Length: 494
Image 1 (cartoon, rainbow, N blue to C red):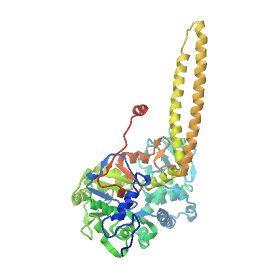
Image 2 (cartoon, rainbow, N blue to C red):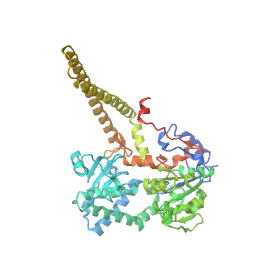
Image 3 (spheres, helix red, strand yellow):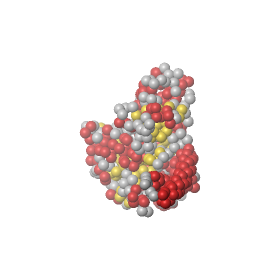
Image 4 (cartoon, helix red, strand yellow):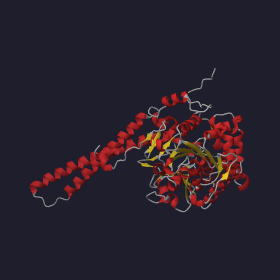
């Protein structure tokens, strides 16, 4: 008798299986928005001939708490041993939720920032101390604007999940450094972080007990089978070494390690040691080396991968989690279609789902604030016109004076109402922001504007979602349709 599998459990016999298809129907994103794929640029999935995946934090879903603790300890030990940093300085690390993607580090001033899409500094911490408005303005001027990465190498965007331990360590050490020392401290942390990734000290611990560091998603294998059954080429493109990828893939798929390299049957091509983002630059002149299997290449460039899979440019969808290495570089250089995996999206949607009344109320208050703001501007304009009236005859003077008083009262009432709406809006935003992340708020939004990360997401991701396996819930010919863009005057007429 065949063992019954739970809905969504991978079918190791090949093919997605009828239970996988039922699972897909039950968890359709029409009803489960946490599993939805959100579209910035319209994409016909039926015209996509090949789908590629990154490995770390895309197909491989890490237990971030365990991984960050391990990486942080290894780097801290090296800072103490090789740099002479007192151990006690590293014992006061902030809460794990303090470190997140999309923050910007000012390595000269020792400040961690959250900015909107235009570079306005919304929140800032030096060490574990939140900067006041006056402190921010002393650093970045009255307009609170920073130039992001255009100002040499002073500002660094945190765009990868592996960077969280670095943020925590730097935050702890900044409290013990003076101006002029902070860049050097950051460079030391970066050096030792790179070392533990390169010399195998981090990955050897992970591969010795992979189940401690990996959350298995049983839909991963079902997705890969589903894509190939639909006639699409499937490839893996990762910066990780072949040995690490080989050691981890069975755990990622929920398979027994005794099955060896059978997982390669799920892919048409595997590229390890890709060296992204350089991989997406054909002019770099990097040539792939053959791996131990005919499907495996080491390094190389995108021209070789396109030749191997027989697809080019917009015929390829690449799914990754790194906004720069996976998306921006591929979009700029080769016009692959792109999908960004943002695990934090699911977390934020869970918070918002638990506060539906607050989100709706915030939207309504914001709409009423805009209307009232226009009313204030209207009465100000009328007031200005009345104040400019001169030379009226005596019998009209009282009438003008009365109109001025009426207009003044109307403007004051509207202004008081506007101030009340603004206070109410800020209170609602504060509640929602604190519930999302008490230090930084939303990954995507900064007040009325998108964050710097949100702007990049909008500009470079054709689509985005919380997990790569959410693709399983969409048929091979699905039409990913972006929402209609509206200009402000068009919204006025709605």
